[in-house]
Amino acid sequence: MTDQDRPGPSSGKEDGPDEPVVIRDKRRFDPKTGEVRGGQQAQEDSVSNDSEETSGSDSAFGGAVGDDLPGGKQPSSPQDAGVPTDPSFVVPDDASSLTDEHPDTVLARERLEDVRRVQAEYVNYKRRVDRDRETQRDAQTARIVESLLPVLDDFHLAREHGDLAGTPFEKIADKLETTLGRHGLERFGEPGEAFDPAQHEALMNVEADLPDGTTATTVVQVMQPGYRIGDRVVRPARVAVADPT
Image (tube, rainbow, N blue to C red; front, side, top):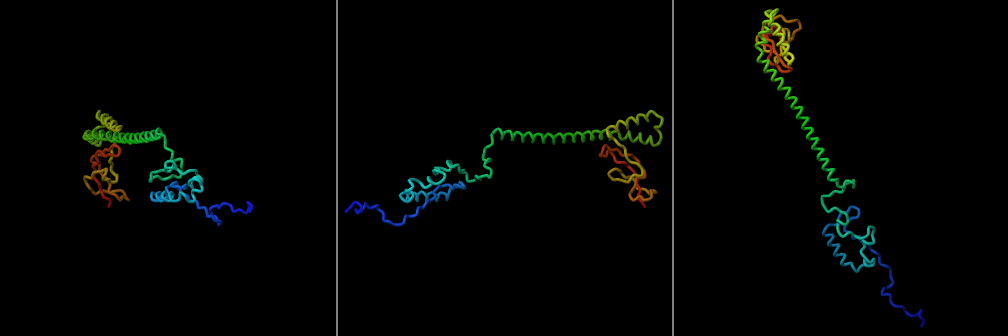
C-alpha cells in the first residue's frame, strides 16, 4: 500500500455544507443616535448571552464582534463614547451650540442688561420729575393768582366804568396784568361766546335777542371774567346766558 492509499488523519468534522456565519452587533450604544440600547434589562440579557456564547461562533473572530466592526473597540462607558448621561439632554441641530460661553462673555452680557435697565429707569424718572415740576409751577402760580383775584376784579370793574383812565392806577393795573401774563395767566369770558360748563358759571338765565342761526346757549353778559393758566381754569367766568328761541 502506497502512501497515497493510506488513509489520512481524520479532520474531526464530517464533510458537509459550511455553517452560516452570524454577526451580532452587541454594541451597547446605537452608533447613529448615541442612545443606550434596550435599557438596563437589555444590558443584563446581553451580558448573560455573551457568557453563554463565549465558545460559539464569536470565538472564531478571535475577539468581540464589535472589534471587527467599523468604529473599533466598544466604549467601556457612556462618558468614553461621548454620549450625554443626563436624561433631559436634547441634542441640538447645531453642534456648535454645545460649546460653553466664556464666563467673561456671560458676565459682560449681564452687566450690559443691568446698564440698559438702569438707563430706562433714569429716563422714566427724569420724565416724571419734569412733568411734576411743571405741575407744581402751575399750582404755585394758580395759588398766587387766586390770592390776587379780588385786586384783579377791582381793576377790571374800574376799567369797565372808566375810573382808571388817566389815573396812576391805570399804569399799576397794566403792569400787574402784564407780569401775571408772563407767568401764563389768561383772562377769558366775553359776551357772544357759546356757553361752556367747563369755562363758564351761569348765574342767570335771561331772555335776549341772539344772532340769527344761533343754536346753542349763549353768554350775553359777563359779571366776572374768568382766569386760567394753560389748560387749568383758576376761576370760571361768571356770566348770564340766554337760550335760542
